[in-house]
Amino acid sequence: MARKTILIDCDPGQDDAVMLLLAFGARDELDILGITTVAGNVPLAKTQRNARIICELGGVTDIPVFAGCDRPMMRHLVTAEHVHGREGIDGTAIYDPTLPLQTQHAVDFIVDALMKAADDSITLVPTGPLTNIGMAIVREPRILPKIREIVLMGGAMREGGNTTPSAEFNIYVDPHAANIVFRCGRPIVVMPLDVTHQVITTGARVESFANIGNVTGNAVKAMMEFYNRFDEDKYGTDGGPLHDPCTIAYLLAPDLFSGKAVNVTVETQSELTMGATVTDFWRVTERGHNATWIHGVNADGFFDLLNQRIARLP
Ligand code: BDR
Ligand code: CA
Image (cartoon, rainbow, N blue to C red; front, side, top):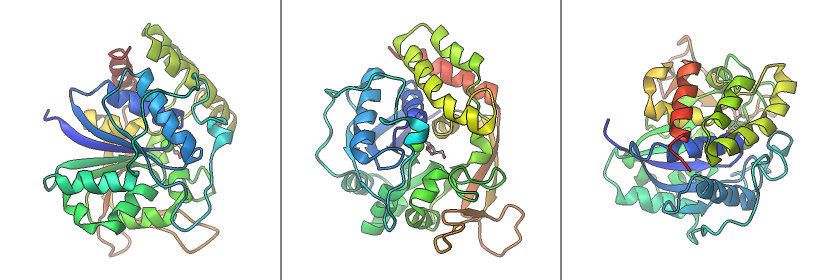
């Protein structure tokens, strides 16, 4: 497979952390241009620090990390410490990392990196609220042809919302940015709750991370144990959904997933359904396809891939 050039935009978050580690374990297949961070699960000061902690955990010193927007475009920031803990990646060691934060703003970096790139060459991987990506598109629309595809975690249809009855967290936090992204005209692959709720970190799967026998595997186990407590209580399952790594897993092994071309429109007006991803799954409107909606996954295959790649890390 040809190496894909990607740009990751995230808000770590334990599941963002595992997403980063999966990408770090696949650098032979993924050229990671940079990691940009956004306010989401926790405020920006913590998401940028957490991304750098996870780089150090994964032994990565050569991928630049940037801080981006500290609040959504139009709405007040909503965070999720009740899920991820006060620091966002609770379960693993929290400290001041030595890996520096880049001084350039994340949105400027995204614009510069894309403007320098060839058409159709960069895959964006957003796993947090879409503020940075939406801002970059507004700021410099000439970046659009450079984007090969956007593989994002967000949205929900069959599963309903996890933040309000109709909205998933990433889209709910910045529905206006999500609206810009879904209307941008570039190919979009969506990992909604419909698929991520099939990727469950059961006790046996959590144990398997520790059985790898490396520092990273043990850290993933500890983060998952913290992260699972909330979702186990909420959904009554053994384990919780490992949302964000589905994006990178899709880039590495698309055959693990199945989906369908649909139209996705984001609700930005109604307080009741704010951030709902209105997904025309059965083509009941004339609205053109703007995304591939992933709804099926081989979960065992996903966890095999994840374990193999984490085994390559320190
Ligand atoms: C999404 O919200 C965040 O809490 C997770 O990191 C994930 O990106 C799931 O709804
Ligand atoms: Ca996230």
